[in-house]
Image (cartoon, rainbow, N blue to C red; front, side):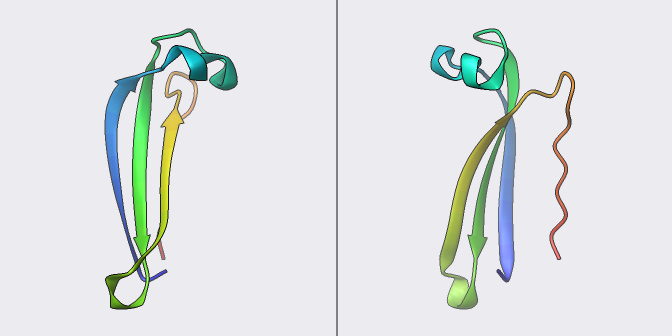
Length: 63
């Protein structure tokens, strides 16, 4: 990986994800979308994560 871009926004949990995350439906979450690029700016990874920030925080380090 040579470069990555992450976008963060506040969102609400969908009912179908609430049980997986162990939170109430429509709880506030942090949505983080990331695209990582390799040589020639070719995307090599895409991911979307949802985080419960009431008891956790999102941190990232890119080297």
